[in-house]
Image (cartoon, rainbow, N blue to C red; front, side):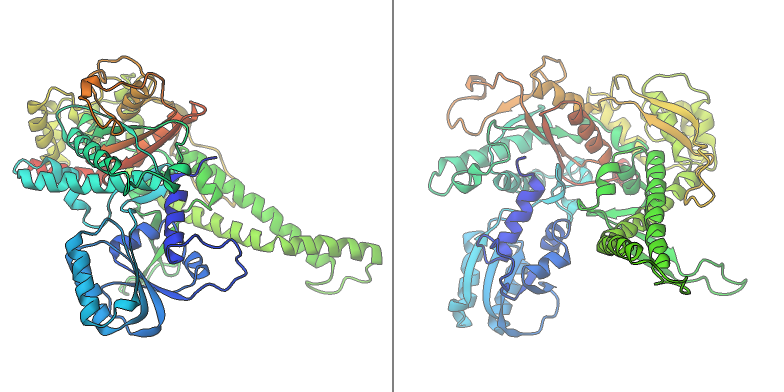
Length: 619
């Protein structure tokens, strides 16, 4: 299997941490001990890919933020991994003058300009530290990989490239240029890391087209400079897409404003919607002690508990895209299996007299047989303990999600929205749903027809600023705000989720609907399908076509690829979400041999997106 973008970026980081040389396969050799200095951007890139233990295995004894107070460690080399910003360059120059480390390996996340490189050189000369600056590298790693098939651009200063920033009415041309350049720089880094030059498709007349034009130009210029091209040699040889060039579809968030506002029902999307889920880490409050505080006493302090949901977690990999009730059942099944294994170990210990009173003589045959079993059980103990840790993790996370589902009636809203989108029969009027004082306003339906629901929405305390913005936006565009067709959308209600789990069950799912998702393609998936399969469709027929490898010729004269694509990357300018990502994953599963990656300028949930719309609607 070709390397995924996650594996490629992790390999590039490991190479960098080994002084930009390939890591040695012989792990018995003692690593060179060193210090890692990163800024917030570098920290965000590394944290989803490399655990602290992996950093330690590579000889990183300390990892420190560039702008923290750092003591000199004069006999240790330092590896820097930072953005080439003015502020960062100034601090690097200060470090050189302070003689903090034995030697310096400067790695810039994005390409550093000549003038900033000269600033570092001047500082090194004045500090008499020229010989200590060992290597300076442009790493082209300015993007964050969250999954094998998902990446985002920025986490720090993401407001700068947000949907709000791109769509605010008073934006200046220079601001828009700067936003587009920032996005293009990150996408260029993405393709350098992937080691491939894509064929680019995009709609006309929006931010996605501006990104496509600039990216095509940047790729073209790099390919033209044969001596310094980043797409030759080692990179291309190990390309994930070595047999056929991939399709790169740039989409604009304004093509589909409904999906980010939709309630969610799959595990990963729900965690992102209702919990603090950030760069694959979920943080939750947990009370100290289960008993309640006495009347009049101070409420008990809450601890913040964090869990990493990683690719090494097999339960997470299997169930992150599953409907929530299925996840709850699977956690319970895993717990039952673990308890059975644990009971087996306890029984063996008891038989062998390792626990409790001696139960009389044991025959030598029985003894040797049980010793073999116990040895086997002991050797599987680390695996068992790791399994228990993961079960506890998902029990806690799923319980927190379930509490939100119950308190906010998320199952009711999800089912209603799905029925509304698929034009199914509704058991309750939309006015009744909106007027429910215990619920959360259904966001998607109100995009279609507002006036008759305005009073009910205001009575429940809804902020109508987002709707004001969408009405203004619809007045300036011919594109409908809601997807015109969701195919065979909808959910299959299985009645109440009344599986009466055994009395020891962690989940009381009574009253929560057990909804089974029916596969349907969201607008971004439909667009991808048309372009990937070379289908003729009014929705995509006028999409622009760029081939950066064709150094001459106009767009109309470029010979086009005639065969369906096997690999594609979809990128959402203006922000994306886990609902779209999961929809593309499900689409790919149904197409054996196809590979699809999903990327977005930022990742937001419904609440975060509504805040951006609200801010736009108030202007």
